[in-house]
Amino acid sequence: MATADVTVMGAGVFGLSVAYACAQRGARVKVIDPNGVAAGSSGGVVGALAPHVPENWNEKKAFQFDSLIYAERFWNEVSALTAADVGYARSGRLQPLADARAVELAQDRAVTGSELWEGKALWEVIATPDSTWMPQSPSGFIVRDTLSALVHPRRATRALADAVIALGGTVATSGDAVGQIVWATGHAGVMELGGGGVKGQAALLAFDAKHQPQLFADALHIIPHCDGTVAIGSTTERDFDNPSTTDDQLEDVLSRARVAFPVLRDAPVIERWAGVRPRSRNRAPILGHHPNRPGEFVANGGFKIGFGMAPKVGQVMADLVLDGQNVIPVDFRP
View (cartoon, rainbow, N blue to C red):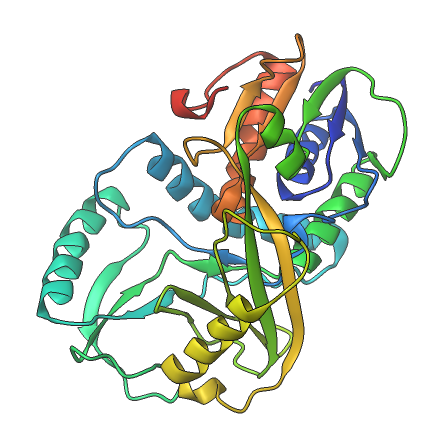
């Protein structure tokens, strides 16, 4: 068991997952974030754990697949340790197909998916089910995958922080960094490494669809949370003036969602959210030795798939920080 001190700078889902993995291995862990737990993009409302399509396989897709498979055990262990409902569910996802060409492409992916997903999840083309939850598909067919999952972002990050504390660590807004230092400071940290931030806007509706699959259509994620809400997201904005305000772009998202998913037409909006997601230059996470801070480490750049990547990010960073074992994909290394 490791006994080294570890300080993680940043209490978003990447930082907390690294801290949790290190604490599980016996490290004395401290998490410091002046803004508190999930103050950045990890405190959003969507929480979609959605895979890349099963084709053109690479290290990034394989890493994400492993993390999504591990996620159920990961979040169940966090829930058991803290007695908290993190809202995790391997709900699957439904996607309408626009035309015959889209159906053909999806069927090809079903073939590659059976191999690349190792029989642990399905990507299949089926006839559109007769359900008010599922929007009409122009082709009469949809993609159903059983790998997609969801989590309640705020509950999950709070529970991760509590799990670190339950394992003897601390989570604070100030303090001195000691021992091995891991930088997981979100948008600001990625900018120091030549990346940037992408603003996203999302909304939360009062509509009880728990236990339903998540939906994806017209570039919209529809996420039915366990607390009787449905999240809709999101915009992708490279240029913006104010990182935390919502505007007409979110109203457009809401309008499109109500057209694509008539079941949500009368559901009231209970929250509008905006935040900046950390994006590296190659869109992959940045994991490993910090290039600008000798002897220190970085775990950042979750962008749109941070919650899906986080369980395995914690594991590989703990391997590196505590044991000196670097199994991080080459494309992720700074």
